[in-house]
Amino acid sequence: MKNFAAACLLLSAIAIATPGCYTTMDNRSKLGMPFSKDKMTGQYERPVDQVQAAARKVVQFNGTIVSDDIVNRVIIGKVDTRTVYVKLVELEPALTSVTVQARNKGGSADVDLAAEIDKQIALNLK
Image (cartoon, rainbow, N blue to C red):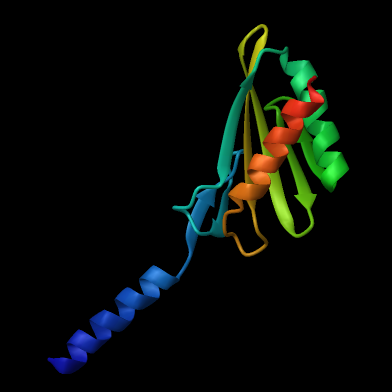
């Protein structure tokens, strides 16, 4: 009975310590910590094309653009060793929603970088 309890305890510890999967802004699954805050959202009273140009400029300024999907309006970039996803959604003709997701190389969340990128996008719109 002791061995069974020890085995259950060991399996529980492994299950908790092992990372799972999270969903990126382009609807792909990646290995990482799934239940951590990694997104910042903002809404701007600008057309989606202006916000997309500002987002491209910010990602290019801070790192490199890896992918720019103009159909789904998702920009993927690398800033140092972090991956940044910027998703743009047109809510109204002059109202755009921006969601920024940032993850470390190991898959853990970096909400500080996501907030910084979101703030820089807002500053580039003025």
